[in-house]
Amino acid sequence: MTAATGRIAPQLRFDDTKIFIDYAPVPEFRVAEAMSTSYLPATTDLIAQALESKNPSDAISILYRVLEDPSSSPEALRMKEQAITNLTELLRQENRGEDLRSLLTSLRPFFSLIPKAKTAKIVRGIIDSVAKIPGTSDVQISLCKEMVQWTRTEKRTFLRQRIEARLAALLMDSKEYSEALTLLSGHRLAGKQTALLIKKPSKGKSSPHRGKNSCKCYLQGAIDLQSGILHAEEKDYKTGYSYFFEAFESFNALKDPKAIFSLKYMLLCKIMVNQADDVGGIISSKAGLQYVGPDMDAMKAVADAHSKRSLKLFETTLQDYKAQLEEDPIVHRHLSSLYDDTLLEQNLCRLIEPFSRVEIAHIAELIELPIEHVERKMSQMILDKKFAGTLDQGAGCLIIFEDPKTDTIYPATLETISNVGKVVDSLYVRSAKIMA
Image (tube, rainbow, N blue to C red; front, side, top):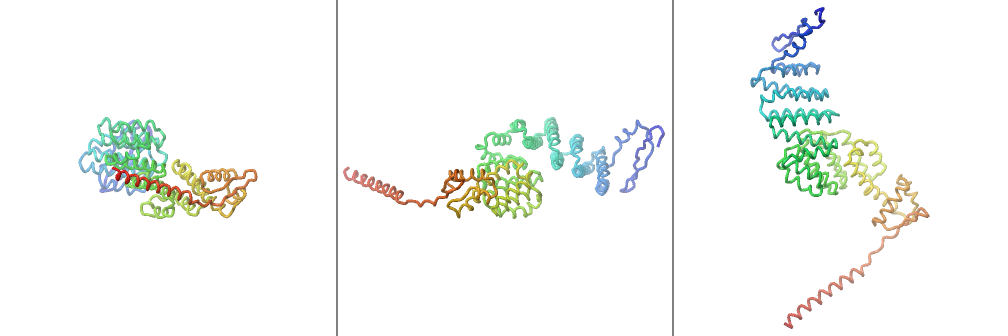
């Protein structure tokens, strides 16, 4: 250590597969130069040693220096590709999204030395790793925009379209719909189909069939997910389930975070078509077990409440899993419909069935809901002819009528007159032929 600087710099020695570090004094003005010019040879032994290191920081440092090896031999390039894969995974585990972004930027000269297919694989891998780090939406959007500019400069059209599709999805998740639509409109086919889905839902349902074959896995999954949402919105839950299942398969193959949303909406469709008993089987399947967590627990609790026809349990579930249910606009909208149109109506019909006249306050007490809410719902059910009755608001009572018996005389009379008319017409035709 020198008195002038008080700094020491490492000097590396190699012996077989081990690295020895000797520390020698280095002047202050040479520290940066020494660190910038130091690198490690891209060999299998060094990569293995980095992976065996118990300290992630040391492993990351070794892999960074392996990437600085100036050698461009086929073996060195192959080792660098392996180092990039390992380094990406380590940075993801350490939640270092900005470092992943910097890594992708620094690798651009390296991409000119390897085939385009491998470049695309590395780029997608790093972007996917950033996506797995919580709270990195802004970093992902910025990273995708940078890579779109780079792919335009390098004229890598296919990779650019893949990244633009990812960027459009991120922008839509961030509610930047105008920018996402502008981006997608540049695509010759896939963009037009997706834009059509956004702008004209009723006309967009058949569009995914035409665009699917020309889209790759991620964009296909995004279109299937949007199609499922559209069909579910029109209460066609069986078709919606099929689209959500296809989207889940696409995202699951890519290990994309959107897979859990597709699976969640699949379970929602099962609940909405009164097949809540199937929810447990889907969650416990081989594919479903990969996504066990709060979202799956929330849907399982909703299915249990639906099976038991319990409003109290349903409301408790909504409170316990507020982030997974109420903050998801799609799930919240359909569960609200399930609560008002199915569970509440079924429970009210079950409670008033034994009575011919009952106080509204008593029904509200039994169902554990406010009187105003119960009175409003029963009024709606009477107008919708869910049961025959009337509300005596002065007395605060519900009067239930007997189900009126259908009078068969009037329909039978109409049918008889219709048949007589057919006979007369037939006789007229026959008489006309005879007279002719």
